[in-house]
Image (tube, rainbow, N blue to C red; front, top):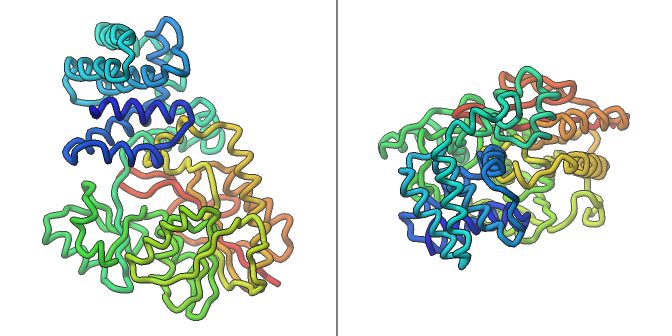
Length: 429
């Protein structure tokens, strides 16, 4: 199958809410030659990154909306518009190859439609200028999210939106239990890999250009992992001590679990996740790192799995909207809906309240999300602190992010970390 046919099928499944990039793209990548995989990834990620903008343009060019059963045709139109607007692919090649997708889809009737829409746009690029420049169109984000970010962060929201539309950097976490960061950096230099040392994580190295993991020195031996710098801050904030009993709730895929054990291997760590399939990823990551941890499939919002032994430290990486990592997961722009935020914040509060009795007096709990929305972050923590008399906040003194009414918020940075939120809570009795 052609690259553009596969891209259209991946996009159609997402447009129909029948999958996500993480569930559909891997299978598609297996169906093309190695040399074609970068293009397939670029077409899928790029089209989704600018999807709201592309959809507005498509609506202007189509006389009437296509039916759900023809979402693959809609996807190929969006794919073609993306190539014309955002890539260096010659226009004639982009149009010709995209039009041929209709034949591969066994929908020859759509060939003329796709060709007409793309050539019509090519003839009138001023269509972009005719669209209201004051609208949310220019941000290429769903309107509800622009409104929410503008309300939450009136001075910062343009920067957040702009960074969400950029390609994220590839950041490494050096395993400091095996390596020194400077020594590992020297190995990268010897291999001709350009990089910058991360600003806030003492284990972080950000590559100037993404690399295949097999080209990273010692990756298969556990010398280094792929993890965003913001996520790397969790281990030092929770700071487990020798002999601690530690719970990593909602642990999959295990990046933070591994980092906790690298930070302090002499702990009893329980990694919990609701999904058996996702726990398999934790096992895979820990095996590569040569680390051991107790794994348990269970719901962190329930307590039927708990053996009654309290924990010294708890990491709650709560399920969230993932609005801080949109640049890594651009399908969020389509899959996430405004009403999801209330549902998620309710779940976050439920999990936090459920885990609190499992924490020892004097113990600490680190609440974390990869969201930039106040409703999921400082509002959840603030309400919990108001209602929980034996909970107090430990202020995070740091030179990253911004201080909130509760906790500290990071935003996606150019060639830097993703959006993330942390709040550190102590049990007083």
